[in-house]
Image (tube, rainbow, N blue to C red; front, side, top):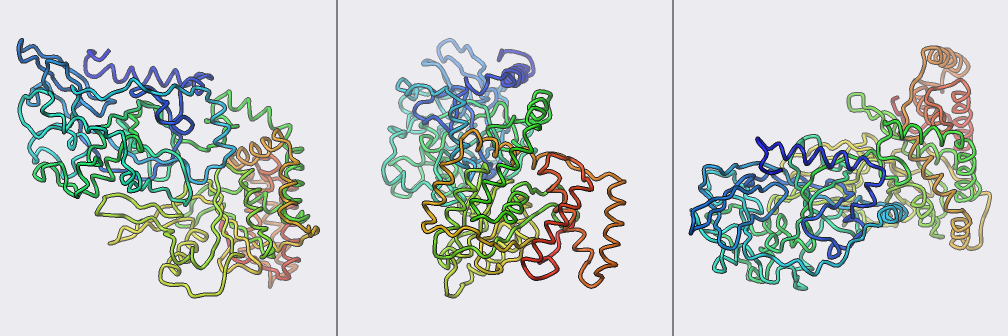
Length: 618
């Protein structure tokens, strides 16, 4: 197929795998980097990876087509470099670097990591649905007749950033053999055996502390401009783990000197280490098919628009009412018997940014759950409940140490030419719990104030301003923020619900643990489907209901002109939208509007004030 005219084989490869992966059994026969240890995966085989795009490296050039020549017979063979990191040539062949038939091509490199905060039930469900485990790979050894195939041309022929294939290529010019005398550039002896020092020095750059899993350099060959940092991707591609890719991390560079000729590469040693980590730690994945995921719930279809997915949704809708009632009961128990707080927590889970008007994020629902017990570890156990329901979440205890020492905002490291991850570099739909009950007396330093400001920006504007030293770059986000506090939060919120416990357990840990174990896994899975599915559904308001809402609001203003403002109308519409969706309704009804008014009346009466904390423009 590679002999086809004008790269037709490349198109056929993508089309073939695209069609094959549409089959229902596709997920079962493709092993996953998320679930299978790397040493169980066969090099140069098809694998998949569910990940977040953490950073984009500079585009790199590679030899899409190159020629190898037999010195004895002078006969040449054209080879193709797509989906490979290392150029191949036969035992008696040389790579003809100056061949007129060579074709230079471009690809983009993404640094991808496991989805931050991904819940354990998500990982387990994906792993059980993908029985393809592979076998320990013991037969793979680096060939001495391979070389990195980015071209060894003069520096003016390349942009300043020379990528992996430049680093691995020979320092010779013209036509040369790939024999033993050139092994330094093509084989790092024992490069796949990492020294303890090397392992410790590799920072996988995860945003959240304590995260585990593989990082991966994903090579994308087409349409890479449709992806952006923090997107959740599912990548199907060819696995590449040739030890030559990590040559700069070999023992030979421990003295701090680079094995590369400075005249051939302008990258700093630190950048070389970051961009060419050992493949045994950070494998390469050459993307054939890449999907941008709407969600990571393994119990929902990946795409909700096709006919099969719509049939699945239709089959679930009749259960909505009973699932909602059971979920409210589950959350009421978790919230110590407070049914009103359970209603608002459900709405919070269903909220999402559905649009932006200028700089205003529409649909955000930052919930402040005040009145939480401080000394019982209640908030820690509450977060464990949340982890059982949502696909990804993180609890940030707002201790003085965390606020003053943690990096919340991602920062550009120009020396290593990479984006240093921060706690707030999270993908869409992540549930972020800010635990103010962990606060303690003390003084915030400069970092602490910057982190508090970053949290404020996230809550109010749903954006994070990444630090590029000389300027800041705004990254919009869609993160559900829940604030737990003893009293009113120090941070602004859209809605405060004061917790009124109806149950005071003697042992909070035993109480919460018993609640979790009492719920059947099948019921938990329905809760997970309910919350993920409804937040993705479309929503609209008919002209008739819009007119009725306007008339009702005019009456509300007449009855209480001092307290009811336009801000209240906007917030009521947000609550009514979520009340409608929680019942499986994709349009606002009069009943949902009245229910939203009733909920807000109960919430405000409990707080003892008549206006919400701040507006949320619909």
